[in-house]
Length: 230
Image (cartoon, rainbow, N blue to C red; front, side, top):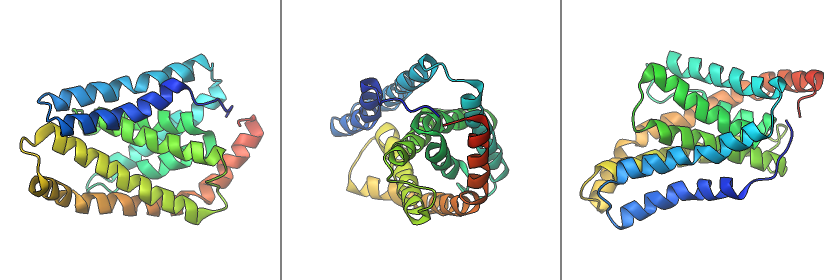
């Protein structure tokens, strides 16, 4: 995957979403849920626009499509196990092997497509943003050499941290958007209620990273070499 410099618009939109969430919480804005959802939706624009302007080849688009489809199928199949799914692991994997923009698009597309089956709602833009940023940051770290396929411990640590922050982001959005009286007690109750789900998410990320990094990574490297991707 060709490397492109990070645009100012991408940086702004990455920061804008949590910033608006914080402002809504601090000033107790009544329309926080739709406002923050709108900002999350707007955050996709620079990423999709920059990807389109880079004129990606079919060989560059295909990994995003294939990995997004695999993540969607895995998420749907594992629905009976609460929040145990391969999406986060594959977001990290995509960013690691195909770059930050592919990582972002794969995460965003997976949330949108899988929710067509599991159910759309105001949570969808936040899931798109959360998984998109997870893949984007993984790709950015990989491009700087901070994450490498031969250093699995660092990837596992990143997967754990990213999954934790994803859960924290979604729980915070719920608190700001739907709890009228935000105080220490209500916040503790909300975060506590999501603890089991977040632990399941974190554990699934580690499990699927362990299952995919070596076998799938080797296949990906051969495909990249054969078709000149990256």
